[in-house]
Structures are given as C-alpha cells and as structure tokens.
Amino acid sequence: GSSSSLKPSAKGKLSIQMEEFFEACQQQLSDLERKEMCRAQLQEDIQQCYPEGRLYLTGSSMNGLGCRSSDADLCLVITGTKRPDPVSVLSQLKRSFRSLTYIERIQLIRAKVPILRFRETGSDLEFDLNINNTVGIRNTFLLRSYANADLRVRPMILVVKKWARHNQINDASKGTLSSYTLVLMVLHYLQNLKEPVIPSLQRDYPECFNPSIEINMVPEGPKHIPPYNSRNRSSLGELLVGFLRYYAIDFRWDQQVISVREASTFPKDNSLEWRNKFICVEEPFERNNVARAVHEKIKFDTIKAQFAESYRILRLSGDLNSILPLRTII
Ligand code: ATP
Ligand code: MG
View 1 (cartoon, helix red, strand yellow):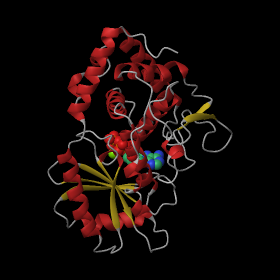
View 2 (tube, rainbow, N blue to C red):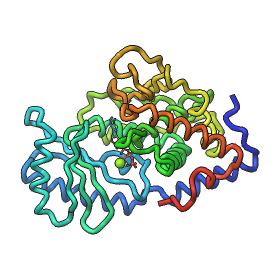
View 3 (cartoon, rainbow, N blue to C red):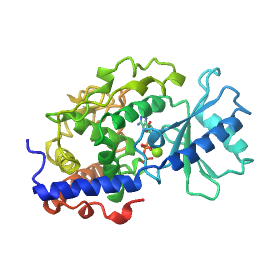
View 4 (cartoon, helix red, strand yellow):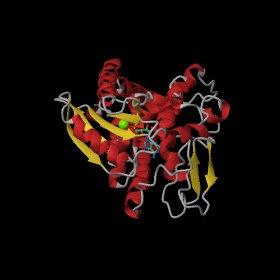
C-alpha cells in the first residue's frame, strides 16, 4: 500500500532533516579510536589473569549504527577453561580492575547476560563488558553488513533509536525495547517492503554468516559483501513515515514473529520463546526472543501507542522536530 500520505514538499524536507540529524549524531572516527585504545589497554591488563583472554568491541560502536554518545559494548572471550561462570569471572575482574587508574565506577550487574559496567576516568564514556556472549560478536558483524547494504539504513536506524529514546520506549531494563530490538525492527521493515530496501544477508551470503565460523574470523568474514542493488527509490522521509505506519497499523503483534534471518515473519507457535510474549523478535543466530524484556501489558501498550501517535503527528506535520526535537541530537 501507499507508504505515506506526506505532501511531496514535506517528503524532501523530512528526508533532509533526517540526513542532517544523522550527520550530526553519528559516531565519529575519533570516538571509535578512543574506544579502541581503551579496549587494547584493557585486554593487556586482563591478560595478566587470563593470558588467553581476547576482548572484542561489539554493539553500536562496531556495527555502524552508533552515535557520539553510544556506550562501548565489550565481549571477553575466554577459551580453555570449561564454561567459566560469568559472574565469578566478572567478580574477579572487578577486584583486579580497582588498581587500574584509567577506569572508574565499576559495577557488577547480574542480568540475564551478566556484565561489568564502568567508565573511562573523568569522561562520560561507558563500557559494558560481558563474558563469552559470543553471539553478540556474530550479530554485530551481521548488523554492520546491513548498515552498509544501502545508504538509507544508517540514517533510518539512528533516527528511530533517538526517537525511541526521546519517547522513553528504549530501555530494556525498564521493560521497553532494547536498541538491538529496535534495529531488528527497522531492518525487518526495510526487508519486508514490496520492493525491499535490503535482502536477507544470511540467505544471500550463508558462507559469511555461518554460525560455526571461528569467533576470531568473524570480523573478517563479511568484508566483501557488495551494496544491495535495490529497486526501491523511496526517500528517507517516506521510509520513516512508512515504518511508523507499519508498526502502528499493519503489524500483527499477537500473531507474528519478526525474523530478520528470513527477511519475513512467521506465525507464533506454542513454544516457550513465543508463547504469551507481547513482542516476538527472533535473534538471527539463535532461537531466542530479543524483545523478552517487554513483559508488562502496560509497557507494551505504551510502545504501540507511541507508534500510533508519532505516525499521526509526523504524517500531518512532515517535520522531524514534531516527533524528535533537534535539541536531542547528542
Ligand atoms: P546503543 O547505541 O543504544 O548502545 P547498541 O546497538 O549498542 O545500541 P544494545 O541493545 O546496547 O545496542 O546491544 C549491544 C549489542 O549486544 C548488540 O549490538 C548485540 O550485539 C548484543 N545484544 C543485545 N541484546 C541482545 C540479545 N537479546 N541477544 C543477542 N545479542 C544481543
Ligand atoms: Mg551499546
């Protein structure tokens, strides 16, 4: 169907606003270099206790979907020892990190995936370090390949992440959507259009995303995937309105599971992952629901209402400021 009811003039204006927003908030090379310096120093210090330990930058710092204020996600891969308990490894690291002067405010967070959270001393750069959650390394390089598949992907996702953050529906610890879930929801929308903007890269390049690729080879794997040659000519503005409309009107939350792996949806069945879940988004490398944090009806309703309300406002105004004030840029 028609993806938007914007006036032609508004389409151009909204697209330019999105492009400008993206340019202003995307992660800079200097931001990445700072994160990479800390990673290298930390790896060296960690190797005092874990000589085989290797530290990987993951998440938005590496996947091309980061902004200047994004945290740095780290995965410590320890092999050799048989299945170390993440919480005991993190407790030990917490003790030994106290002697490091370049980091401070170290906290152990016992979540489903336990992490050590800390900051670079005197700065607002925050780190989240997990142990052996290697699926995060694989999906980081999958997302990076999607970010490079079409020029519209990165501005779309950055604007949507900032929109969700501004509207307080981007915090998995408070029962709303993680950034990772939002990214998969945008990719699904772009894959599922009548003329797709992006394909399923796992289907088109299975050898690049084979889950049995050795973890230290994963960052090299998808380096030579060419941009996708999409016939879809929609502007950024049309795509943003279409995205809001899709989740406000078309998507059947009660029946469908989002699968970026298949570039499609499949019906919810009675299995543990999908049964009684408000939102079902499949992790591309595992049969897991990445949206399981949304477990309260009231939060689910808030999320749906936000899509509906922003869709209504944006199609009338054609102005990005009406749903995402420019002052939220950083
Ligand atoms: P932000 O810029 O807001 O920090 P982000 O892209 O880093 O966003 P997060 O939700 O913080 O996204 O997740 C960081 C990374 O952790 C993701 O890129 C992904 O690799 C991994 N990850 C997060 N949630 C899951 C999950 N449920 N299953 C598997 N991997 C996950
Ligand atoms: Mg992050």
